[in-house]
Image (cartoon, rainbow, N blue to C red; front, top):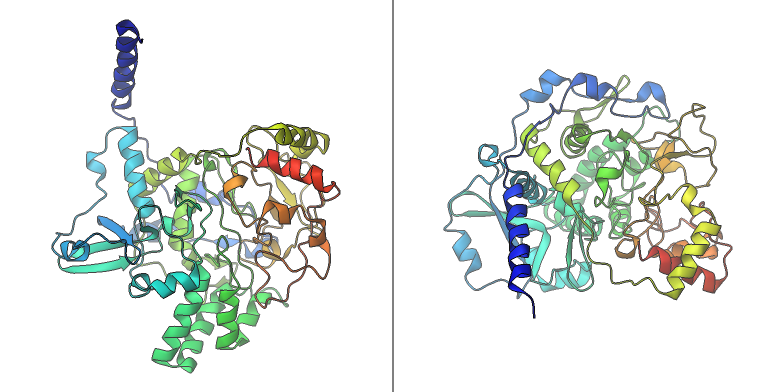
Length: 494
């Protein structure tokens, strides 16, 4: 029997904790677009003279701030509550983000969650409202559905009474993972097949406006990803591909990989896991953006979501260069960054058993910790690709040759010449693996056959489906099958 004294002590501790949580939060919001911080935010590109030049501070703050309206869940077919859409058509528009009412840290974090889920686009880019009401769309694409029947990659929004719009392209569209049991992991490596869905949408739109007109629009869009300073720029190929080839390239991109801002459908990166981002010193697979404080994360979000399209590269301007129609406010970015810092991984079902114990000994024996250093399981450093000349004596650079495919870090607008050392925490719920998501599972990543020229990647196979082998990172490939099982068992406990 629990004593009354113990019960009252627990209650007192809980009351004190709640009181402390409600104490007014000392808000110190950095100015997002500040020249001094921007000047040192990014590493120079491998072609230094073409490093990005961003929109200036005055022009940035002339861009209207984004109004975030209250949004509502989208349900899969057959899971929507009775009368749900009819009710949404009767609700009044409501601004969901109001910094004037935020006083505690938890309130700011909760407001950041609103920003994370808020759509930034009301135009179909991956799917339409009709798609999300069609059971065959889910069967064809494999779009994940949460336990409660919701689709966490989109939201219904009411900006005008009586008009319910489908919104997407907020942070949640790419940075949400749905586990096999339907658990939603905000900030996890996304696993909605965005690019496959986009390819199907492109196909459907071509039937409406005509293939030639559609191809012209896609070619114009594809030019944004070109690097004119590279004589053999792979991205230039997209400008001469047929519509069927472009659709095929989109269909080849698996869940967990996406042609995001400043990349392309030819060199798409793996979607990063944002859980634990607070401890990471570099952002992007190429370590392009330094992460020194919360202001840097705010700047990165604004760049990635809104203002990258206005960048210049030396004397080269983006084809469709123009400031966006809206941007996040400094308050919204600050709340969002606090929310990202607060994210925690889901409960790990993998127990530390005898196999994992043997795997930990192998991890130590193979000196994996030199790069994947506990407790973060990353040393937060950069590794240069072969042939790239890097400055000597930099404490944040590991002088090692790991043989990864260098194209993403040499042939995109994020091309620094480095790949950052990723954290191994949470690999049990992530995948596919590698900077371009070539390996679907850890078992595939540690399969020595992946180095063979005849190997067919289990994840991203390349834009034409013909790319063979997953080169580089040979560590652990010489283990016996049982040793590999033990190492993977250990990694899945992290």
